[in-house]
Image (tube, rainbow, N blue to C red):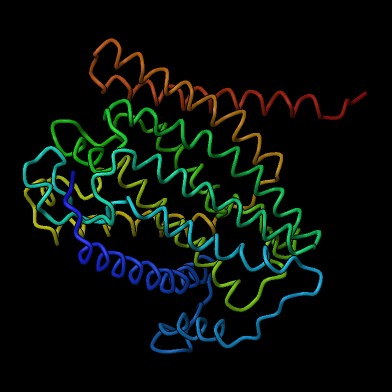
Length: 379
């Protein structure tokens, strides 16, 4: 167990909050630049050098803009919803390592500073799922309290989407937990730094499932059905403005950062990188490697947003229940067999690839069969 130090913990919380909120502001600028690049336009380029201060100007606009609360809304829940969105996203980050940590089994673990707000939490991944799952209440309450049909439909879609995609997301990491033998995120990282390789090499299928479910949990394209501007004007936050709208926005980006960290921790070795950042590397190198990996995933999510079209809602639900959940269950069963037989985990690599290729082949056959059934009969 790590020794508790109140001053150290408060300073870590302040530093992490400042870093997350500052990063969210810059990510808005980065995403608008990426969108401009993908769509062959400039993006922000007026405020500051290269438009670098555009996020600051937008933040000031949210602070100074008139805060409008429509007459028909339930005021208490209308105000509570964005607060829940912001706090739950930040709360989930409490157990996420953001830099180098000492091996939990080492003697110096209790006296050494760990780059995590709450170190030594043996149910860390369960805590994250419990805290992040509360974010759905923000969207449901925001949609219902607005007393607006577009907001209400967005809230209904959100409840179905969150509940559906939490199942494959949770099942995809069970294989990682079985291989590691722990729910502690720090132990999961250290398990990938020894003789064992990163989990992505053992379970690429689990990584793909977690990645897709993470996109859906963040309401990012192509899974942004609760917002869906073309159909629902703005979905659950149609009636929101000023700072309350900004809190929804910051909650979404904070959730994106958390999902990116989890991808790195669960499947890409955290701060570990061969020949650069090993167990004996300095804390600064580990921090930079961690930041580089997380930045890659954040940029990847942004590029996906401006590349792929939005799913229909029936396609969204079918992907979860007919594709991701069966694949996650099959992957979990394979990991259980490998653990029970005490075989090398490298067997999981061809199994995962085989399941992925087989499911793609079945989907192609099913798609062609449906096309033949729907084709007109020529007399």
